[in-house]
Image (cartoon, rainbow, N blue to C red):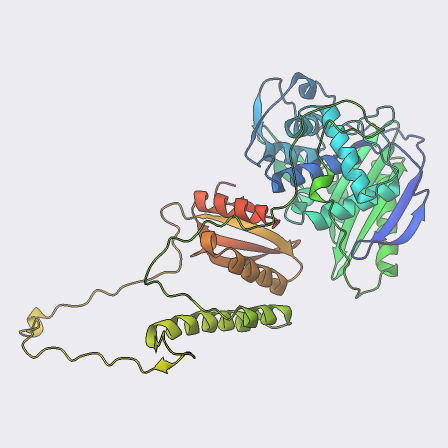
Length: 474
């Protein structure tokens, strides 16, 4: 879509150590300029946020409005009145930078493009993007729709750290967008620069060639932003220079200081509009995270023993830097010891202090009891071996839930154990599995039914744990 001729757009740049937020280089970083399709980072961020908070799902069928269908290229080619799953719109906006898909996302979440722009501005303010004003969801030139290299770098950092489970969208060279397979607008840079994994390109005549890029090498991650490049090639070359500068200046080992995501109550009331954006829209009631567990009460059982799990021991092990095998062993011992304590001993209810008595000796079999006999080798019955598996993929138990992507296997396993302890009801019988991806280690619970995975995810999200369903048809 981009024309070949150069444009005379103002130039601005910033380089940031993504791990700490430290600025390593800047030039005109606070000059308000046209962001073009860098805008879609915010559109996608809010979509991820809405999924996390249960406002919409990846499989929600979105009806395309005439307004969305009429957006100019780059576009997916959506038709007014058709329906398409949200997951395909996200792919089209992130990979192809489709304007019709971005508008459809905004309308599906907020009810109208104006209301969605209001939410974009509220979210930007909560992130500290003090020089940004959004007017639309796609980034096409519009009066007052402005941002800065600094603010877009800040936004890119939030995308990486706040939603690592979705960040892989920005590194896909191509993607299935439902109605078509689309190619990445930044595939040249992604293919040519070592460690590059995103994030977003942008171009309009007023903006020039913009790019927010990120790359990771070992423990180091750099974000670089350019506004006003004269061509795709010139922009990519400049970004590569800035990235090289960042990797040279960034320390090898630092303490990661992740950005703080906007609070749950910061974001959504479409009818409370900032001074930068008028209009009203749909109000979505979000009152923050629940304070009490939504777990149902256990069915009373008169003779059911109460497990005395040593939770203090488990918590102390989690707080220390111990391997997950030790944690699992301690957990098994704690649970096993609790069961043994209840089943092997009698406790005197009348004693002032708990008194443990010896277990009763089982009585011998009565002499008059006649058991079945075996007449000879030819009549011997062979016992059929019983095969017990931990999980089965039959009966629809091929679903799971993902609770995040983490920088190390240990971190992912530790989160899985914590979540399992907090959500034993719906995750009982599931298999904890860590899957290594290009961007880190996915923490998954597998072996659930679709209904079980959906219930587990909703309960985890109610507690503020990031979660989404995964399955064979996802």
